[in-house]
Image (cartoon, rainbow, N blue to C red; front, side, top):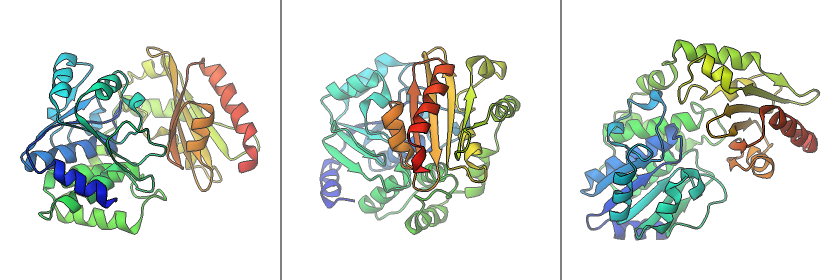
Length: 335
């Protein structure tokens, strides 16, 4: 972490501030965990702090300490806009391009408040006056852990510890991904010492599936395809299939990893149709040296991390599958 960032942020936080904290659209465990932990920290330091999320989040995260205080922008636009206008500081967490927060992006860009980016994705935009960007980090929650450690010698409350544990756990695939380092495990140990209950958190996240979600997983696995002679698989889910299982936000979380669990597979993709938004949402996962971040940026208007990224297509499912197969054929020599 750059000393200039820490010293400047310390200076900004010396007097009480009005802070708005924003995660990316469709916030996951890392986005919600980091924003909530940072909100709790700022409140404990006698600042005003409010999280404004572009849209709602999955049910499996609705137990996180403080989540009931989150303002959902697409449900309370006028209030959210007022809070952004009044803010002294706007913290954007777990994303690095304003397009990741949809129409909130213009509000943030035009706001008089100083912007602070804290994020671990590659290729950040330059909209923030203060930036803590580190693609080598396992998660934004690990970055917030380090930041709070630098700013506060008093340690972590149980609320903060639980939020940070959640984000680190989910973004590392339960500590399995290559981004998990010795420092990550040291952070987790400290968070457990501070009151985070790893067993309960894991159960809240991973053992809370609905009957319909498991039915949808069955459909997804029946739609699993392998590209001939290559260690590449993909899953498709059409809108009608989602509707047949009463799809709820977050139901497809982790489905793409089933493809990557196959022996010998190095690259997995899931394509999920969203008729309302007129696009196919795509998630990419890989093992080893193959960069899904580069693949997503090159072919599907996306990006993310070396082994985990997202993208999208505005074509039909059939056309998107064809584009995916064509793109894979172009980079087949990388496997």
